[in-house]
Image 1 (tube, helix red, strand yellow):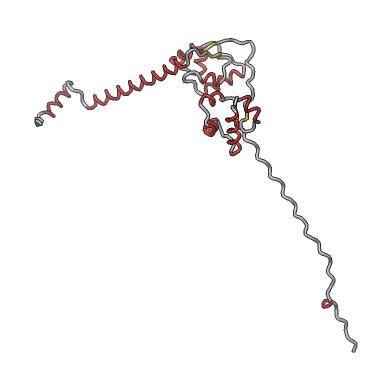
Image 2: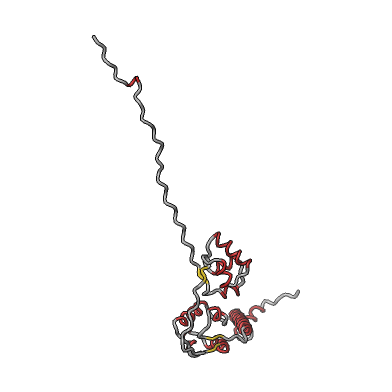
Length: 229
């Protein structure tokens, strides 16, 4: 192997200073820029794929449920809950601009949502949604009909809640191994009240012991009569 000439490092430094070769800082900045561009491209691909998976889906803004809103790319649980609560109070949204101001959406997200949104105006407020199913208290018939549970899932739910009441949706999903689509459809439709603890029975009063008959004094305890002198 040929030896490197002692002037090589000096010549290389001179070329870097004169701009003919990139220095260490330039290479680091170029690498960071390439990584950022790759990350942005990957995020855009994911976003476009998610957008494409929702093609053809349309949502009635003034009648949509929380699970309907969650189908829109980027819609958070807090935004879905806000929209459903406003709808229950009789508030109606007239168009995309009003929705954007309400949720503080960026223009890019609004453009993705826009093809899926329908803005129908109703003369009367939306009917009140049914009360949520108390997952820790409801009977088998209510659970089966309102949550469309299969017999196997119904048995599993009853078995698990007998061990310990469910705390929230995440706990319910983990213990019953439910798919995400099922859990998303239950958002706003179930509640997690726990049964009241059973009061302890009052303590029993002490039982009286057996009564003994009165005792007669023994001979030795009788007073001794005095003797005559």
